[in-house]
Image 1: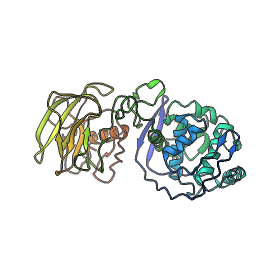
Image 2: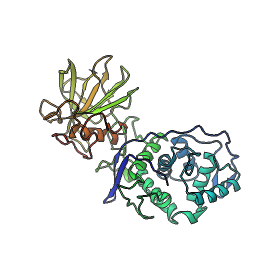
Image 3: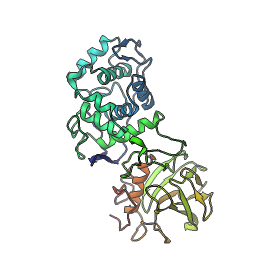
Image 4: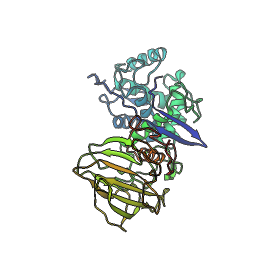
Length: 393
């Protein structure tokens, strides 16, 4: 199978851990042939040719495949082909030539065009639900996919049971080679992205991401899932975001007036009027959830909408992006002190450990900030689940 370079992942004590470097996939314009919707066995072809993650997930769900499994499959297809059914090298799932010949014959025999998303998705659904063409994949595929308790688990199940790309683990297991070219971590990230795109990312409030694990348990080990229970992507309502370097924190710019949110329930500990170049900083202490007691900040090109001592909820607007300035910086603050956690020893152009760790958290919250690689020197995205101090690289 095909892979895209950019991430590593592993399974430790049954918990999926991921470090993600987002990969941009180009989705080609799809053909006009929409299939005829002919039902076959336990599956029916789409009425048209799906093109988006949400449409892929919803199609699989309509075929009786659970949401987590649908997202896990879609995440793998995004990794393999960018959801392009004519992707060179093996179409949606990057099937090898012998397997593709069998798949194309099956698709044609069921009234579909082999080079369309409709035909290929119908084939995949039949693989899962009725073991169609089952000689090509693990016989326990359906049980594994239906039993997956998160999109991350489903992504690894599909990778191991169906894709078997380089670095995949044995079928029927959750193990895989974190250094392998299969890019298991990236597949997990895309699977969560697919579930969110299909409307499965939010709980009681649209701005609060919830755990996608069985029973609603918190993701205590902080995999990069965009689903830490009770916490929010602080850039959720911002528009026109341009991600910039990692330094003491993480830099970005966006459209003026964009709301900037609290990522967790917090108390405003301090507002510094002149943090940098006459621009302010708002310093918070997290008051609930797995990072309670940690301090963090928004700074520079911001207009605060809160005051010192105020308590704020996850997802609450605490500032807006000002019309002019040096861009924003968000990061970890030294608890009870007067400077960012990454400040000691900081030099211009250096990516600090604290900044890299906050970029990692932003990815976990679904902000998709990219790795920041090449924009500064040092660890632009850290692999620590908790804030760590500097001394830099």
